[in-house]
Image (cartoon, rainbow, N blue to C red; front, top):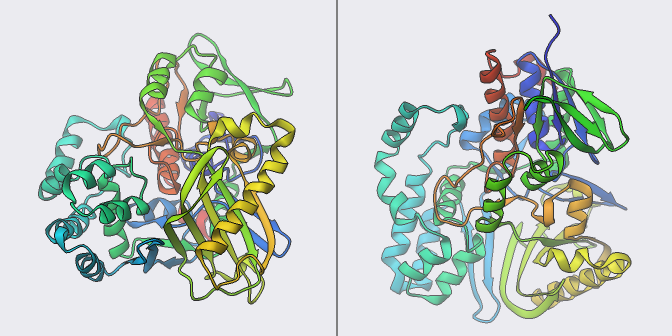
Length: 498
């Protein structure tokens, strides 16, 4: 009997993950990718420098088993993060180092903000408690039973107090429980102010446990390892092709039609495109349209960004890997004023720059529509944004000589994210959890009313990021296997070897 055929729309991490698990579970697979495998998880060469476009930190812990199943950990060493970020207030000259030593962090915060000593203690204690929780990685929520829910509640019984106290958006938590305005600001330098305060606790708890890391070789090494795993499993891919329509017969997905007019027949389709693109474009608004419209009205998207990368002829070993400076002289990027500078200093991995050099990246908030309307003026405005950010870095790091040592500039705008990775409206990680709930509301992997049609990726899992993208691909195939009555199988160890 011929193997059932699955077409996967999108070759980012979720699509590659789904492809690996579908192959292991006995399906023929073909990934159709608009631009290049890896999607948002990408890196590119600019002269002698490598621009890493994705992984600033990798969340492990309970998610490590997924990376292991996908064969990534057999191919890519991970460097554990001990110093997560440095928070600096340019006006008040306050500096906070967020490290894996939570006791040191508590002591530093208490010295700087003594009025909030009790709440700081509660925050650090809560971080250790919340890290004990295990997210539902092994079993797709779509397949969970009421007994699974009861078991999860029982497992988190000791953490219920912390979960209730921090179950609100970070800015709301800070306003209600912290008296020091500077401490409130510092916490929202670590995480977006809209996300659940529990996200901050999880990050701190995972950091303390050594569960945050960076892949040696960066995003490219992580991506390439997953691409190799998919290839070793016998998966097929078609790159440089754009899906225009999901073919439907009798409320069942039967394949896809491509922009060149060709089509691919399939027994099932998994879309990892954004939910709006999948529902409104690929499905023509015939399924899940009302639910999607309501989500777009009430849920929050990740704010679009400009990512400016600079090749610097300095080693910059004295700077931390991540640095956030608040209260800088205001600068405008794409119609949005910024007073905060978020920097990534790529000075740890020798593969990013020539000896004695480094790459400095700046992330700034911006507006998608402002960039989308530019047309032919986009290139000039992109270059101007790069210069504005380089000047802002120079002012914020006086005496370092960043501008005079700059040898390369590369700027990605929200339009870049759309043209290269189909990030809808520049929302590079989809939905931003913003109601304080944990876990945040999610989108089912099945498309309602359309048999054989599934969705996976960052737009199904609010919060996005590498772990959720990889896990979402895994869970979509679990649901597919359940619907077809076949066993779900993880890739065998033999397919994971170098």
